[in-house]
Image 1 (cartoon, rainbow, N blue to C red):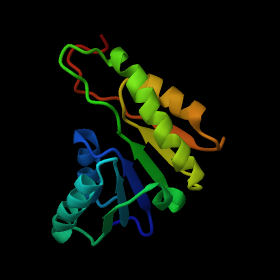
Image 2: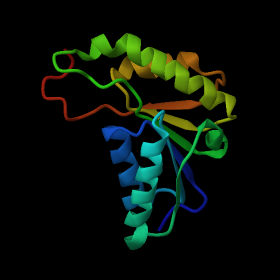
Image 3: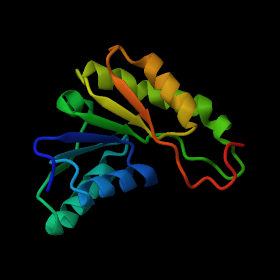
Image 4: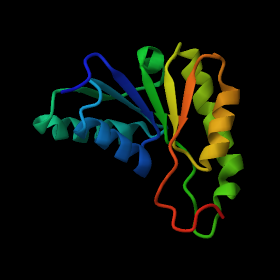
Length: 155
């Protein structure tokens, strides 16, 4: 059974964001799921695909949205980030992903969001610290989601 009235926003619709969204739908963790990404057409397609997956679960409102949709969400999951290129270390992603994180946090907080943020973008410790420093509201709670499938750990 879905958690009645709960709204979750996933920011970043790549491999990790799509996996989070699918897991949220399959585990019936929210009644409303919003997917945000710079590639709007991809989020629209993924939202339709996820709606099809709800045939065996409780009905949900799943849609492609924008930052204004986050104003009444309880949870935001940030998975957006530049893809890691072959041979590139996580630390080499820092500059690119800091710019992306700032471009997310500013409109997110401007929307009036006042909930929990889960950061799952690499390098996760630096991105979480940056997100905390970019936010405009002091009571936002941050959680870190470390990726467990890292065979060599941090490089």
